[in-house]
Length: 292
Ligand SMILES: Nc1ncnc2c1ncn2[C@@H]1O[C@H](COP(=O)(O)OP(=O)(O)OP(=O)(O)O)[C@@H](O)[C@H]1O
Image 1 (cartoon, rainbow, N blue to C red):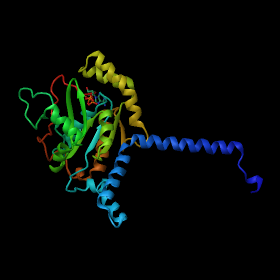
Image 2 (cartoon, rainbow, N blue to C red; image 1 turned 180 degrees about the horizontal axis):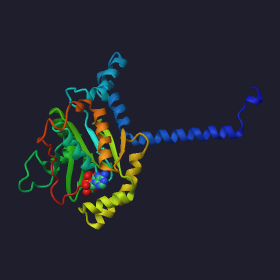
Image 3 (cartoon, rainbow, N blue to C red; image 1 turned 90 degrees about the vertical axis):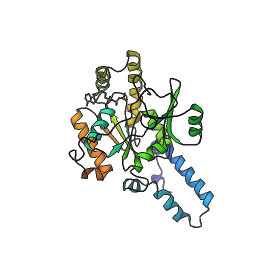
Image 4 (cartoon, protein in one colour; image 1 turned 180 degrees about the vertical axis):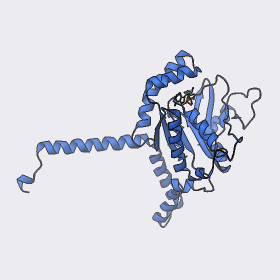
């Protein structure tokens, strides 16, 4: 080789650094997307089970089931669910409530399972599916839950079947969840759309939580303490399909509507006027019961 073509020490070192940086970015991406390994493992298991003669054909139908295009065009499984995630107090519930009002009958919430006893007035399958700890643990072991948590000695969780029921009703199932729940959803096979709502600043977030007045000081501090890493995760490359900053509510809601109409074009056919009075109910969590 012509010595003039050889790389300088500096160039080699730059190349090595670039290689390390790319490797780091790849690992970070894979770590933030546990569904990749899950998907590949699933594919491998399906191949070994079926032993197809044409692996290319088999792969194309196996992965076609996961494609967002298939999911949003109304397949027998219904519309692809949507995760709305963000730190506590950012305005997820407010924005989701406005969405439901704007598109009556188009969205639904899944009914969670819980091991706590029903309260007076609560109905099986309306507020919750009430179950025993043994039964719920068995369900978790059998992979029936998308996500679950143990809160103050009771288990709560979202089952695949509950989301499926909303989809079968022809509605888009919305999962209004925190970052921890979102990470669990990512480990599951649900394959939803992911929207992250971020606050314009930590000060604005604190003001909102204080003005809402639903948490004691210690709980409020805990929520604010978690918000920093949650926002960092929300802004992380490739972690969410879309990120919306909730500053002026009117503007952020207009943006959220644009995102949803892009994801679910059938929403454009529906106006607020059409379904007046047909407001969508969210299963109430019950007073003082806080799962995050
Ligand atoms: N753009 C906004 N500007 C000012 N206040 C807002 C805005 N959006 C929501 N809020 C207010 O902030 C408070 C928190 O909103 P909300 O309860 O919807 O948050 P959240 O993200 O659902 O919280 P959590 O996860 O704790 O349920 C509410 O009092 C709401 O009215």
